[in-house]
Amino acid sequence: MIIRPETSANIAAITTINQQAFGRAGESDLVNQLRQVMPIISLVAELDDQLVGHILFSPVHYDQAPSRITIWGLGPLAVLPSQQAKGVGSALVKAGIEACRQAQIQALVVSGGPEYYQRFGFRPAATWHLRCHYPVDAKFFMAQELVEHALAGLDGTISYHPAFDAV
Image (cartoon, rainbow, N blue to C red; front, side, top):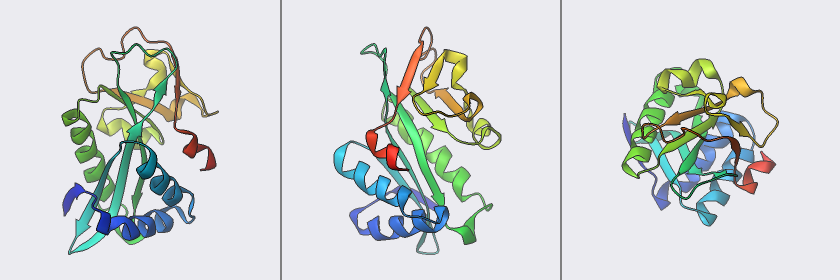
């Protein structure tokens, strides 16, 4: 399996992956909209010359943000149903975290299952007094420092791009 940045030739396949993984168009519409309005890190998983997974990272807003902090959000993460539970998602998350480190992003947030994301180093965002602007149970909103102590001393709310409102 190869994990690599998306190319413009991959957009249709990424749309299909997200639609099949989520059973609806919301996430694929989100990916397409974010791609047009902000910087993103978008990786694909390729297996036997076929795209089987996709992950996206995009900037989020911290309402008390000192100019020193750069926080991005992970999501969506999508894997074709036929390839789920085979390590594709894990490979995408690991490669994505490393790509964010290389891009000098200081911290990540994600809204998702703790049993899945904690294995990659995510912890409850409440550890750093961070909350999500969406009404999500605190145990599902997690964060990870990519730079040691990047989140130390913070206390505020993380907001995603308004395009996430439709999902």
